[in-house]
Image (cartoon, rainbow, N blue to C red; front, side, top):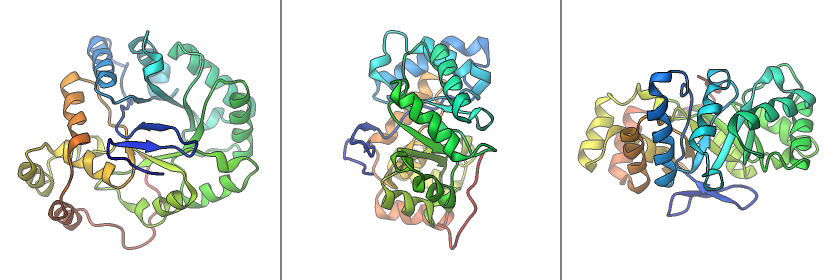
Length: 281
């Protein structure tokens, strides 16, 4: 796993993807915002935020349908990610769920397909479904979300399990527990880490220390929070439902945090002092 100067990340396959992408949780649920959300997604692609993350869970497929409309005619510009719900994640269910997602997304393949979180089905079942989808060329890479170190170790010990490309987890300045063990494990194992809710759904943006760092750098709190995630070697997929918000997020790509800024952020948002159970939203 690596982060290059142009803010890209390299997957285990060697493919480079944009380190800053676009999330879609809660998008597609309000008809009155549909055109704005489509415009935001398209602008993000224009600005190089070409990883677009969605899931069958989001709005019961509404977010996938929105993404499919937004990317019409632009599919090849995007690294498209979706997720299977745990309840669907047996071998046959994983394949069926992916095919439903492909239909809603108006595409023949996904670039990355993730198990959304671990449920009742054995990991072997989900992995078998991913393998079937890979062989059918309906997905290019597969991975997981919300799996901690023990789960990752179990997964990668399975036949073919070491092909996991990504673990997508909750990670931001206020949720740093993964730095104790999961991030080092993923780095050692070559698994790319992707952060969802990298600004804690906006809840950390009014913290005075973050605002002070942003003022000193001539940036916004959101830009500083996103730049911090990127500097940890982690990809970020902030939700981007309005064009102005997309432009603001994009500014994080060009922002570098000096040592004094990082020290100030560590003081207010300290790293973990020991093992911490994996947090989820």
